[in-house]
Structures are given as structure tokens and as C-alpha cells.
Length: 120
Image (cartoon, rainbow, N blue to C red; front, side):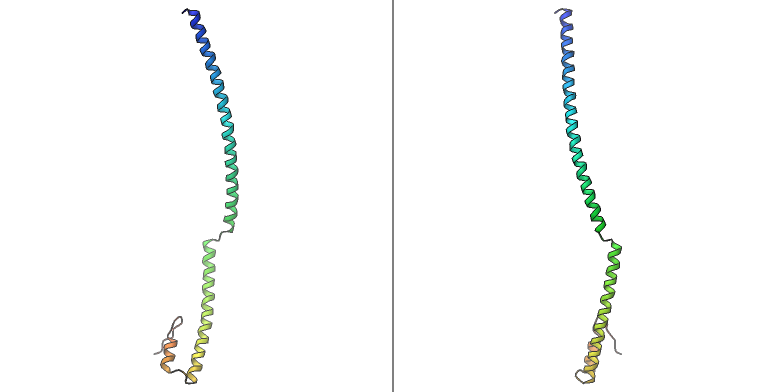
């Protein structure tokens, strides 16, 4: 081979490399466009999820609110139970006055929970 042939081969290889590099660059650009489109879709989904999460958080009850409401409920239940206990006391009183129940039975009933009374 002559020097001229070597130069031509070298030039052909160089030209082929440039063509190949251009094609690779084009394919990479195409892939980048596709990937960016996919990321745009993912971003939209995250935005939707963030919106939904914001709505859920705004509807959630806080622990302090629940604690306060449970304390109120407990207080209401104690008041209602006290009223019922007063009715039971009154009924026991009436039954005792009419000699339907004995003193021992009165003590037994009145010593029961939730508001037990101790007799000495």
C-alpha cells in the first residue's frame, strides 16, 4: 500500500466515525426527548398526589382535638352516670322505706360501683 492509499483509508474511517457519531447524537437526543416526556408525566402525577394529600391533611383530626373531644365525652358520660346513680339511690330509698329490702341489701347495693358509698 502506498501512502496515498493509507490517507484515503484514514479519511474514510474519519468520515465514517463522524457519521456514526452524528447518528448516535441524534438517537441520544431522541431518547432525551422521550425521557423528558416521561418525567413530565411523572411530575403531573406527583402534583396530583400532592393535591390529594393536601386535601386529606386538611380533613385529618389532630391528636389534641381528639384528646379534647374524648375528655368532653368522658365528662358527659360521668354526668349521665351520676344522674342514673341518683335514680338508683332514690329507688333504694323508696324500697327501704316500704320495707321491701333490708339494711344489708341497701348497703350491698350502695357499695357497688361506679360510685360506691361505704357504710361504717
